[in-house]
Image (cartoon, rainbow, N blue to C red; front, side):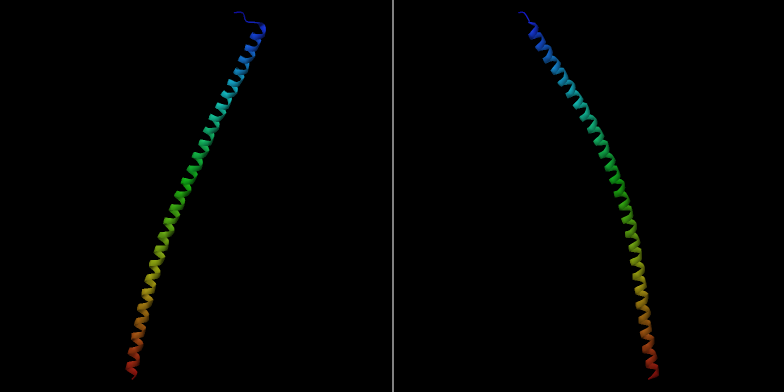
Length: 101
């Protein structure tokens, strides 16, 4: 079986074409791999940033809740004192009115 120059040229062109296709496929694969790694790192950084924000928000919310609870307790105590003072004032007024009669 003899291979003619034309057939040899055709085979050479086919091999060259396939070699180029393989090189492009390899380049595309490498680009995809690098892009995926880069996107993965960006995603990790974004998640880390969100975790930090969540921690800060949780801390702030806990602190504000504790502050609000303290303020409510102080207001409750002030209201109780005010009520007791008013009750005592009414008792004193009634006693004063009784003594005048």
